[in-house]
Amino acid sequence: MTLSDTQAAPAHPRDEPVPKIVTARHPLRWLSGAGVLVLLAMVASALVTNPAWEWDVVGVYLFAPSVLRSVLLTLELTALAIVLGFALGTVLALMRLSPNRLLSAVAWAYVWLFRSVPLILQLLFWYNLALLYPRLSFGVPFGPAFFDIGTMDLISPLTAAALGLALHQAAYAAEIVRGGLLSVDPGQRLASAALGIPPWRRLFKVILPQAMRTIVPHAGNEIIGMVKGTSVVYIMALPELFYQVQVIYNRNGRVMALLLVAAIWYLVLTTALSVGQHYIERYYGRGRAWPPWWS
Amino acid sequence: MTVDGDLLGYRRAGDRLHELREREVLRQRTKIGFVFQSFNLFPHLTVRQNLSEAPRSAQRRPRAEVDVVVARLLDRVGLADKADAYPHTLSGGQQQRVAIARALALEPKVVLFDEPTSALDPELVGEVLEVMKDLAVSGTTMIVVTHEIGFAREVADTVVFMDAGRIVEQGPPSQVLDAPEHERTRAFISKVL
Image 1: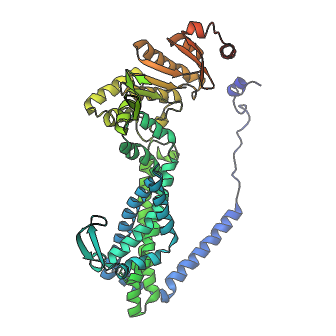
Image 2: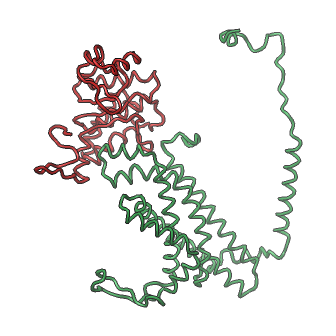
C-alpha cells in the first residue's frame, strides 16, 4: 500500500460500525486520591478544632498596629538589602569579569569573605562597629578630612542591619549576576561590538536584558529568602516581624498563636513576591520561543 | 590594514603605531559592516529595533531619519511586513536578511560576510544570495567568505582562494575558478562543482 492509498481510503469501510473507545479505569488513582483527601481533612480539623492554636487570638493580633508596623519594617529591610545588595553585586560581577586582574581579584576576595562569614556574625560586627572605629571621617584618602562623624550617630541599628544584610547579599548577588552575564551567547557581544555600539549601551541594552532571563529565577529565590532572612536581625532588637511577635508572646504567653501570626504574614509576603516574579519573567522572556505559552 | 585611507585600530606617528582609544575604534567599526555565520540578531528586540539600535546609539542619528532608513532597508531585503516581529519567529533565511539590513543601516564603506549561508537550509540559501547579488550590483564593497562557488563566480570581481590561513592564489573568477594554477585549488574546485 502506498502513502496516497492510505490517505485516500476511509479509515473504516461504510458498513462496519466505528468502535466506541472505552477509557481505561484507574482504581488505584481514586484510592490514593481518597487517602490524601482524608489526610488533608485530618490536618485541617487538627488546625481548626484544637483550641491551643487560639485562632481568635491570631485574629486579634494579625492586624494589630504593632504587628503591621513590624511587617512594614520587614519589607523595608528586605527592599533595602535586595536593592543595595544587587546594585553592589552587579558592580562586583562586572569587576570579576573585567580584564583588569586587580579588579577581578578584589571582587573574588569580596565574595569569598562575605560568603564565608556567617550572616549573624556579620550583623553583630556592623552593630558594634563603633567599638572599633568610634569616629568616621570623610575626605582625601590619607589626607585632610572634610568632616567626621561619630559612628554611633551615622550607623543606627536600622542602618547596621540594612548594611549587614546588603553587604552579605551582594556576595551572592555578584555570583548570580555573573552567571547571568556568562549565559548570554558570546555572539551577542561580538555583534554589538561590530556595530560600534558604545560599551555601556552594549551592556544595558543588549547583554543585561538577555542575562535577566537567567538572573530573575535566582534573584526570586534570594528575595524570598531575604524576606524570611530579615528575621535574624532580631538579635539587634529591631522590631521587625519576628522580633515583634516574640515581644508580644513574652508579654502575654500566647506563643503558638503569635508564631502563627508571623507565619501567615511571611506566607502573604512571599506569595505576593512569587506572583510578581512570574510577570517579571514573562517580560524578560519576550522574543523567545520557549516556553510556548508565553508567545 | 586601511579602509578609505583610514588605518584601522592604530594611529601612525613616524615609525610608531599608537593603539586607538575605544571611542575611535567604535567610530571605525561603524564604517565596516559585519554579517555573521550565526546571524547574531538581538533576540529580545524586534526586527525594527535590531536595525535602528546602532544608527541611534553609535552614530547618534535622529530618530526620524533612522526610521526612514530602516523602512527602506527592510523593503530592500523584502521584509517590510516583518518590522515588528521578533527574530525567533523568522526563518533562517529571513533572519540572515535582517542581519544584512542591520549591517547596512550604518551605511558602511565595506561589508564583511563570514560564511553567511552556511548555517541555512539549502532551500533558504537562494533568498540570501539574491539580496547579496543585489548589493553587489548596486556597488556596495563586499568581502565574502563563502563555499558557494557558483555565487562567487557570478558576483565576485576578485576571488582569493585560501588554505590553512594562507592565500593559495587570487585573481578574477575566470582565472582562479575556471583555470586554477595550483594543485590545491584544482582539488577543491573538483570536489565542490
